[in-house]
Image 1 (cartoon, rainbow, N blue to C red):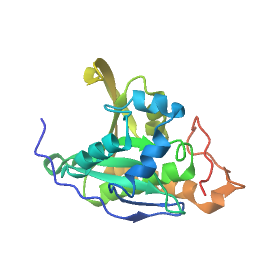
Image 2 (image 1 turned 60 degrees about the vertical axis):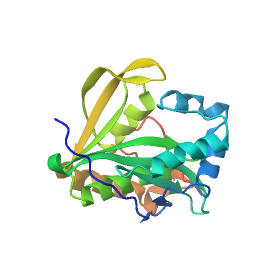
Image 3 (image 1 turned 120 degrees about the vertical axis):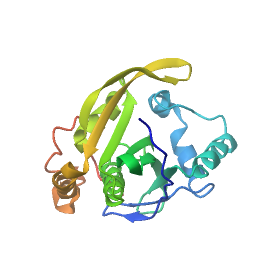
Image 4 (image 1 turned 45 degrees about the horizontal axis):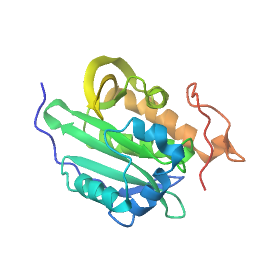
Length: 221
């Protein structure tokens, strides 16, 4: 049974490979729009509930809706040279059930398959459990293999498929459900932190893989 949603707030989070900050119109949206609207992003938008957008103005209008939603906290992923390259979101926080969801992940090609991409998820996962939630959920369309591989790589447990749960752009979709529990986080968080250590990389390449990741990671500078 669904409970009342919690009011959520995004904050600045700092890592070794970059940082996160609250999503802002203009400063962040222009960069993300530019990086996410070319032919290489077609697959990304196919899995999203909305988009792509016809103009920066239309994209800004969407971002305004996102940042005004007090029940979702959007984090912008920022490179060391201060470029906004994507975002991710905490939503559907339910204190009564100690549950929250990590979702609406928009990673531009500049961010995909980089160490910062993994670190951003790690930082938000750590933040969510630090708020006191006991269950972190991850959902995606059943055919979204990239998202499903990411969930497995991050340590989420696959719980099943909800048939025709979402309608995306007029098409009913099956949804894959994953979760990670707070009791599992100390071990998994330590593994992620060890993988993210600079000592695990040489010449921009990982030395030890995180689980059996299908996609290799390169550092983002």
